[in-house]
Length: 253
Image (tube, rainbow, N blue to C red; front, side, top):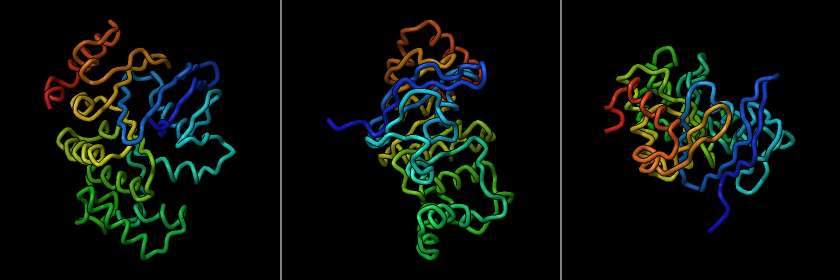
């Protein structure tokens, strides 16, 4: 058995007096899908931002493919290997879908413009956006923008993609298209860490679900164990609340 693709060891992060991460540790194997769930303020988004150094951890270690991720390493190097799909898309308004997707390979990897265009077309095709290559973000629905942002992450050929609540800003009828793309990525072997409230997605795709609260990991388990027989009362209460808020349907998908 080889080393995990991502190793997180005793990660801590505070903002002033507020301790947001309190000793987080877990591994992600190549091709693995970890789903992080938990109440708002539990540290899930901060954890993702620490993994690719949008935030610098105060203590602890992160290893990607056996190499430590530190502020001294080139941020270009870190972020070209770790894709990030944000809740609010973060597309450049002045660039078309094609321009948004081809920018990273050109700027970060020095890819030739024609080659980057072909790559961007291929990535947009892979997320079902080939008919919108010349559209600007303002001309796209939220779900379409999110699919472009996934294509943008894929264009960098990352080892790992982080998804921070990628469907929470979308209208309900647009969520399915984005989840379908993510499920296809998982089936194709993309290594992923996903922060989400989409329990149907977690049940279908995750190899492990991690429940966080107050900056700590409360419970870890396979989807079957986690949803059907969680060990902790706190986990059971959270899952009950999520079902109440988001309905049963997503748990039957």
